Length: 230
Image (cartoon, rainbow, N blue to C red; front, top):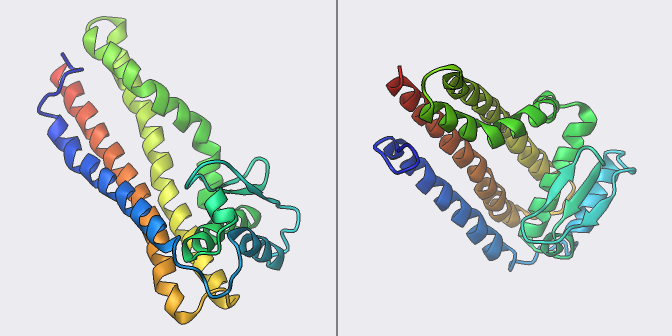
């Protein structure tokens, strides 16, 4: 049965290992540099607030949200949410992550196209990520008659999820570049602190690269399985 491991899993295994390594890398970087205090002595919340104000975004609040590494910018409610360790912390990791999330707020304010495109396709991409595999496997099992077409529908929906993840890459890299530019030009980091802060943001970026790698190899597996039914 398709639900059991088969030879096509070999395609996905390297990407899964890469994703596991990337997740471990970002947690290692966060834990390491969350113990390194910044010389500026400002909290992540303070830095986020100052960056937003310097861009004239006084109406975007900075709030604390539960969890660890749950930091994000909500474009619908126009709010920057920081985890407790980032919101209250004054470490290099806290400053880097806080500035990164304000980078998304700056993107939204400027109408940065990749971000706008990603937000617009999110509903169909989310639908695709939820329904693609159930529909594909139903069509795979019942490979004759009308239900066979569900395989193609599942693959099509999954393609939207991959497009979403691909567009996420420039969005995240651009937000990190904006973060480092603001942190350095604003005097929040010394020359010696730039490298460690970049390590945190670079490690986080790798998780998005790994997500794309996993998604693409999953698509290849679906296409191979689909070909076996022809």
